Image 1: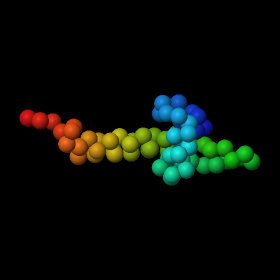
Image 2: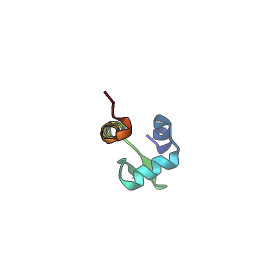
Image 3: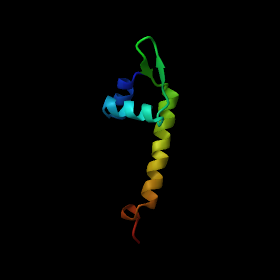
Image 4: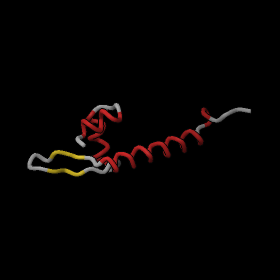
Length: 69
């Protein structure tokens, strides 16, 4: 998928996806003479799953989000 495709799926700007790719958070490959980026669907699915885990951990450790008895 192109970075624009990924941006549509995540509902973020393409520049944000590019930042994720350049930082290594989202694995991608650069192909062709013009060096266009592509992300495999499995890489995107793994990234999304890891974000769910990271968010759940954040919420469980955040005092603002802990349930009160």
